[in-house]
Image 1: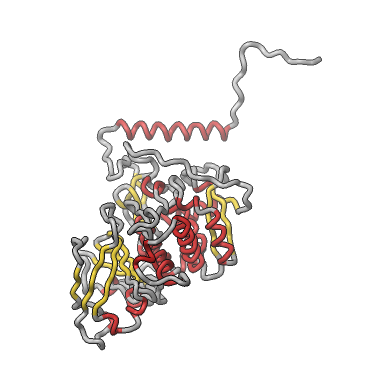
Image 2: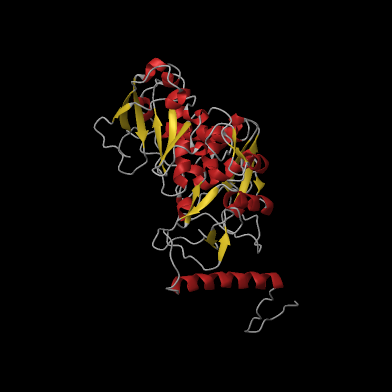
Length: 438
């Protein structure tokens, strides 16, 4: 037999130019990590990410550290590996073009990636059959506002859309684990379907394979590059698919909030998203304390299906006479905001009636930058003025110390023919034994 006998020494395998370049870039990244970790002069932001002197713009005129959000903060627990689906499930592998557009839509560039708080966040309910069985446990930082916006829709679904259910607080608390999961699947589907103009929904799931190769102009995060996209033209099919793969949104380490946000953008489509936005909001997230916060456009996309950047009704002219986009239709779940520094004279910051008086008595509230959900179990509250004399509201703040929804009693002594903008302005609020949160 012709057999080649090897000597004791084996020659190293030859590397092509591309492989050598890839290894050099990899080593450069690690050199940068060690340099940032040992340089005492390098400032640290709130989440422990090193701020490099090499800044990059975020599209808003603000200089941000290159690769912001790339490295997990020191001393924080590693995020469990996400649950993956088979690459043979039949979705469309993500392309470099789509991955790039997602990154640009979110951050305004392809350098930034999601920070630790985003990668750690997912959808998780409180314990079944408890006072907060209807409520999601919410994260800190940027993902919190998305979870709270979804929370409003969960309350709507549980209170007002289930058949043979009384609209009482107890119906929100007598929930099994299975009922919680059915509600989450239905709500996520509904939000994606509305954002897709009731024509389609796109669901993103992470697989075991990688579909996007390294390029100098795109920072990989070893997550986005492994996505498959599943498009549905029927809402029922989308809901069944999400229900079958709900672990990808509610499992620890799933990065469920990021997957939902990706799915939301792709359901809306990049073209519609650009038509929704205006000059005030070139992209959806804004840098803050080493992480990223949602702009109003993200919340409005969840609440209304459109990524409108502002809270007023319709369109308005800005200071430079540019056209600014507000809310075009009445939403199912409303929105209220208040801040210590807000000016009552700034017409562009005033919430319009489309969000202030929603179809259902549920409001996502932004108070000094903290999101909570306020709701009433009486659907007639917004359609019968007689119901507004004395009524009860419930508040879920998402604070870890909260064990049950706060119960507020509102007494409105104003006249029934008051203007809509003055609704409940002179009302008195009783917190019924709970210390006011705000």
